[in-house]
Length: 60
Picture (cartoon, rainbow, N blue to C red):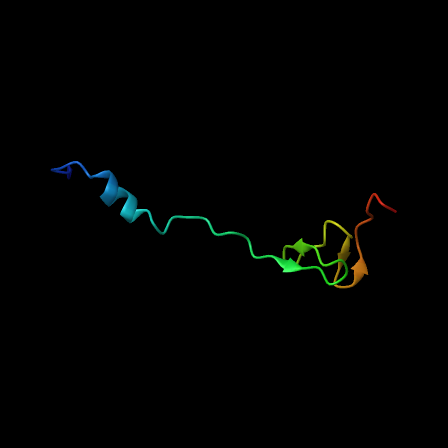
């Protein structure tokens, strides 16, 4: 079984892991209220999806 001859430094280890990061979610604006929302999801603030009311909000 292969065994490393030298200890991998923190710098080399971290350089290898530079691509293993999470990206921020893409946000779009709601057409009805203008609040940021995830694409292809109902708006959490006004409850609409593609111009139709799909979720009843507490304000009503």
